Length: 270
Image (cartoon, rainbow, N blue to C red):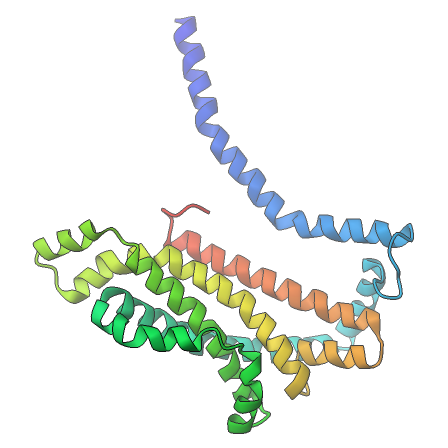
């Protein structure tokens, strides 16, 4: 009886261990940026880094607080989020749809695949002058530039997810007499969801890179514009406020997408 009870308790501990590890990993992923800030603060206080170029986080926080009180920071954040939100939707939706279509249809993939392959390597910032020429210097050009960057990442990840689906799934759907829509909804889409969310996360990070560069050159508001204007006046603390803000915005966006992924793709590894 004693031996049996000991084995049962040991088994329970083994079953609980993965859940405990998952909580530890999640805690570490949330607070690892705080560790970086702590190391930065200590390095600045002990003069291990040049404060002219790397002010202490506490000094940057003081500058940020002043901008929060004056509401200046929120104006720039709102402008950037609006541009990213619209551009992200414009690029992600067609990217996912076309990725599913080309992943499911070999003839369509062979016809249009080379076109996308030729366009993808073109640097998105390199076509900014052309986009500004066509759409002007307003928000429309920012929407289009972000949409282009987001499109390719979601498109290729979605198409790859469908193409990696085991052929037996398609054979089962065919033998069961499933319609094209049923095959798409019950087999192709679930198989591609992990790759779709991977593409969405990569596209989110890319969208912040693109919008920052676009706001450097063709905007009068936004976090990217604020960083560029601070550099021009050598306001280093203000410049770092913009850098930290855009980093936090991207980080929170990734967390939001990961939360959706855990909701809609519970079978995937996180």
